[in-house]
Length: 418
Ligand code: ADP
Image 1 (cartoon, rainbow, N blue to C red):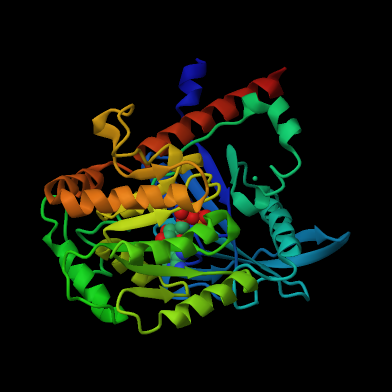
Image 2 (spheres, helix red, strand yellow):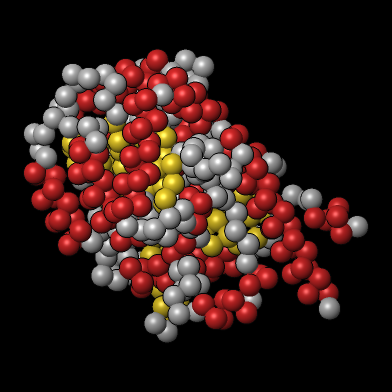
């Protein structure tokens, strides 16, 4: 009997601060959309609650309209009204909360990086719950993402979390294989697939021309990095990678921007230094379309994170035939396996990894990648084709979420019965 109730149709509400492609800063946006689409495809009722940011990509929201149902929520002990909008994004129903609060929490021209982010998102969290309550929704699962649960994401709570460790589970993210597909990607002039990777070289040529890099040597390896420039991502190793790549005779492209003024300034200086260089370019902004071209054009992608809950760029890179060079941490450790590591079955080996978060360890991994690229062209081509074929779709991860949801619903129901 329990088994039957477990597999039923679930009503899942995601409460999140991002959703690609309308409001994306990093991987969270990809995850909310990718997971929701996969769960919807499995027959579940999925809804999303987002803040109504002024800076969203409104062109990509269908049938946006305001609901005749103001929701009241409390903040600092006082009641405030919220205007509720509803629309469709990527085929998914989305509620947008517009707080009628004098601080204009989501009219700031940016998603994050405001002095009162803490207040903005605690207001949003409370209002989202009030929306569900006042609209009479009774979801089986409320799935809170990142910011809302940041107090839990572990600082200072290690021992408390550890004593409840049985309640925690880790599920690797997937990627939206429709949005990230080099065979159909609308951002690429030349498409390609694992069976025919010739188009990859054409994208490399396009990127080099676009950024003003030298095209003299077709085989010169192109190393890329696409990231938010925050300490988590190993900024000192990213900086080191630029110089080390040049020493090894490669080209380097960075696409990244930083909410931390000191880091942004530091990278602006480096960007200026390489402004007209033949082999290195730093693009310090968020640019979705350029990111697609860089994944397609690059031969290697570095992800030297200090910690990484999951990480998506290594998966996207592999789908586009760019070989990841990643630090062995968190989700990177679960998805990137070293080509030279004899303890790992050959079938799983798909990139280059290093353990210590220092320049020597990183240089060793980068050096080995260059060695393979320069000395074993056929082997490299096979690696590219193999990585492109790996299934990083949401299908299997969404099934794991489904199981976890069903288990949680079952235990909540049995707790209610007792
Ligand atoms: P995080 O969520 O910590 O930022 P992830 O690896 O999970 O890291 O996801 C990063 C996502 O953000 C990827 O889709 C990546 O392509 C994208 N991204 C990061 N920086 C930029 C940028 N400057 N321009 C465009 N896309 C970016």
